[in-house]
Length: 302
Image 1: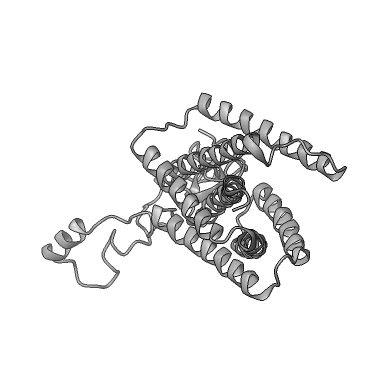
Image 2: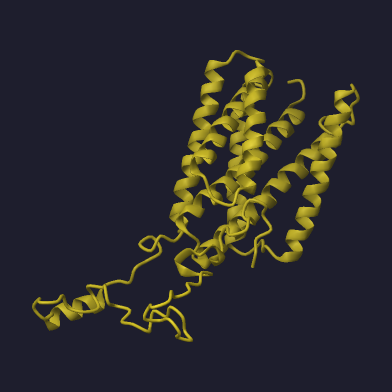
């Protein structure tokens, strides 16, 4: 089943079609090879599959294996996902932690290095991060340096924006962080306990709402450039829009969880854990920004 998350739906991502571990690849024997003319092509069972395996036969000229050695080899644990280069949950957790730590470190740098209400560098960092995010999302191969660079730039922009918000509403930064963590924990528990199931219908409805939300925000941004205000980021309507935005972020998290679970089940390459980390980071950034806006509306002029 192909994931509907745009980050995980690139061709060759989290699938066996990319040729990982031999899946989706076909080798044609060359003329003169032992398998040339064989109806089974380059069949590993046509020859001894353990020809180069020291556990499959005793070394030439060596002493025969004892019964105890054979029993020990037989009882040895089989190779797990980590040993075979496949993605595990630990890989996803580690890569996500690295990405988020990079984001937080860059945010801290912006917080302490930039003066208040300095939107110049923050705007440039945000724009470059957006472009990088699009490149990473539509890039077939995974690039860890690009993902970490995105996290650094996005974190720098968020740090500057958060500092501005915190200068107006003191303590809003920690409130937004705690709110984002609460949404993540709630969605993880709901997903693991089966309260939320990522079905095709659930995905279609969520994606349709997300597209409508993004389109509405784009219209609101264009209108605001001409000095008009649709009231989508203030007052009662702003609260509703903020709640919808956070709900969509939670929806994206559920798609991320499902994509990670599917990738591990399919035996995706270990490097794909970086793609999972990127998707989770995108969702958390979305929730954090919407949380900042919602708390600012709720606090008003206090």
